Length: 278
Image (cartoon, rainbow, N blue to C red):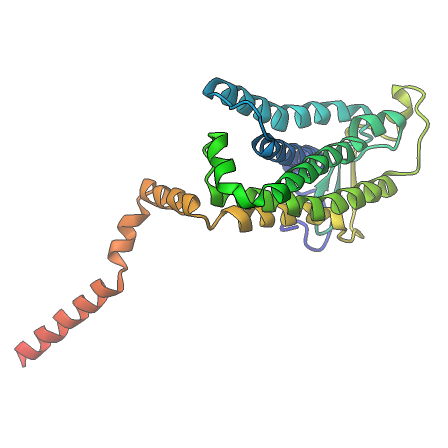
């Protein structure tokens, strides 16, 4: 939107090659999978009589979560080349976007994963909320029993995130999928590779759409990022990280020079010097 506020001119080809896949396909899928991993972890904590997680098991779980959050979207992004009809498309206001054809391989490769991942995450969310309602009077003991790095405050915020995900992300994902199907259509029967990648739809072509209007799916990153920021950015552990970062880049030294008491003390010293001269 910064580069294309009023038109759809192809100003940044390399940037568009990267962002068309990252923002249009890989990013949203990675976001859904990471939310799924978080809510699944909460489900493990609230499950009664669950075996405690040792350090090695926790490490394997983290490796699996990161592998799924980054690996699965990357594989789907590569597979989407099968149904990609052009290099990318430039939209007014939004920028670059992936361009695919509505074929049966496209449904299995691109379109079906968001509703599936959202459905699984919503199932875990319902499970977490169910056990929270049953054990709401004993949350502190539940968190302590799990032997995880979570404290009660962070656990409650993560559960609130699960409830928010259930109420907001599910409708947004469903609406976004319907909008994507509508914008990608009409349906094209798949007969061969040449059906999609023919002379009229070369992978090197760049499409331009200066008449684009913002849709609900364009706000997914804004709403999801804002939700996570609200729940976790003002906690005590986050403030500790901010202080360490400020100290690491030496901004704390800058604060010593701009303190109000230092400025006032310097002003008073100058005033005393003027009086002595008089």
